[in-house]
Length: 217
Image 1 (spheres, rainbow, N blue to C red):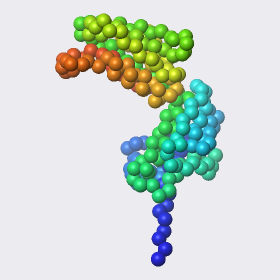
Image 2: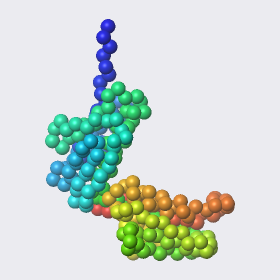
Image 3: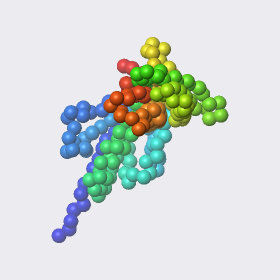
Image 4: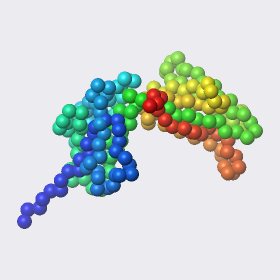
């Protein structure tokens, strides 16, 4: 008796509005979708290199490490398929969909992370400057827990950082690439980790207080 091959798992990509997470289940993996506005966003995929162009700029991402197939059955629709995939491999389909969705949001609305200084006694001093050679912003942190050590963090390419004008002791990180903005915020938070002390008592540091978009609806 001839054995039938399993049908491929398909994730459809259409624009910037995601289906409600409350209604999604594991059985709905073939029905998830994104809608792309052809007038504002252009998505190009060639040899698993994704290029998304929008009002705020261009983002590129290589997905060659994932064994997925892309197709363009209709206008403004991208199908992502995986044939004969195990459970872990099939999970990559949603990852690909999320990556492209984040890129679409990045070139239309951008991403903004806010970080607050937390200190009990020694005030944290933060200086911001741009490296003329690399063109990247650098964050210089002084007087953390009264230490003389100067901590420096270089922002990822395309990430801008500035002190908040309305709120005291707050930084704002902005950019189009969610991975770069979030990683830059994580680098700042990690370099100010309290070591060799009880972290329940010593809460000093810089922490992410808010995540959102540059262009608010």
